[in-house]
Image 1: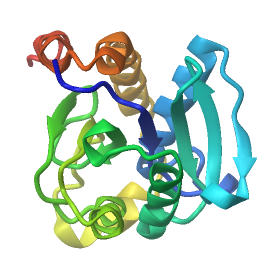
Image 2: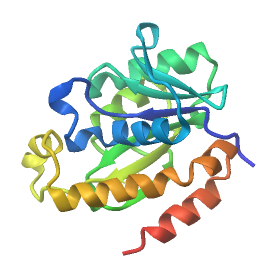
Image 3: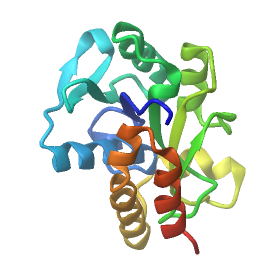
Length: 192
């Protein structure tokens, strides 16, 4: 079996004005795990983020940098605790999946996502896990920036919340390194 996830990174933008925006889907996932596991998030300025310990030796992280500088926070924590890239899961909003779907994948390109682009550069590799939370696409490429920085409508929010809830149920597989089982559960549930 592969090594399990030691660092869960939820991507988003800090600050009140971004809390409800689609770009913060990664933060929503971390918040749910914190609630489910009774973990305590606290600001850690050395890690440029809000962190919580999980099961004693695993970490939850919400970078307090803006999205396009997320790598600074991820690299700080990973380097300090000697966590390898393949032991990192980045949870992020995904335009190429409809709201209500989430998919797990290893490696690959950043697909234009500025948070992933910065993490690629900071870790100097693309070989880390991603949990892609579908938020849908506005239809036009020039509308993307505006779209991700707006709140989803009620139906989209419900679908995104359900997919975050579903994907939180594979946490034990992710911790154990049983990615095949995690994908099977997640991707079978997500069939249209």
